Image (tube, rainbow, N blue to C red; front, top):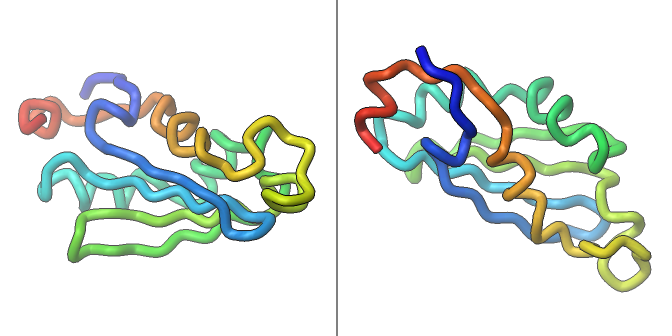
Length: 112
């Protein structure tokens, strides 16, 4: 096992859904997806994003594309048109999540 940032094994993309941000995390290799599914729990994402997400975190699995989609409720200060936040549309939220440090088996790191 080696400690790396999530970005070493996954891509990410994020945006707004009203007052919630939508963060997609996509495995860089199909064999990494089961590891992401096990490792990226709602609780772990909530802890990483606690300074941004004031509501609950929801997770949706997308196994056909090797991705997880997280909805970070109450994270945009009311939404894009009324928020006073610098990132009122949550475009940086995937980048923030991808900086999470995780322990990854060496054999998965060799795939990327």
